[in-house]
Length: 171
Image 1 (cartoon, rainbow, N blue to C red):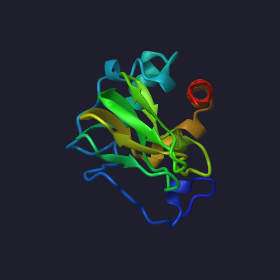
Image 2: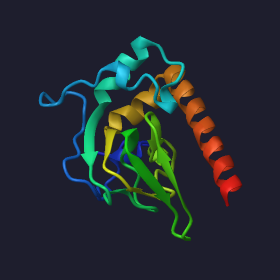
Image 3: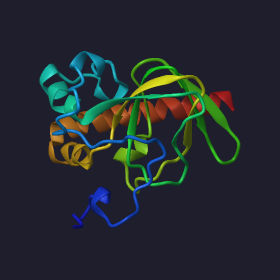
């Protein structure tokens, strides 16, 4: 069934590069991610404990080896990655790349922004631990809860702006 305005419900093929992707919340085998693990995530800055409790069930942990492709430029953005430990290279088809490391950094922000296509590829350059959000319900939450959604999108714009500035300074 298609829901207008929600790209996750369109009849498009789902491409999962990493195995084992799940759609929280509600999966009994999933452990809820403690809010302490998402408190310092770039896009969740300034949110209170109650908001973080709403967000945490949408997150699940994945560990990836060096060389794992998290997402590929141009593909449908169906996952948001939160780097907890390790290092990931952001690579563009034109040959330009830079690395991201440190807890709380996000990758795959196109998950939240139409047309919901990754603008770059992300490849682990060291074994990494990530929190991953795959649920289309999270996209709906951001768009239905205007206060929460506005704060997340405001934070996202600051992340994108800072990365663009850094990218321009490097290159």
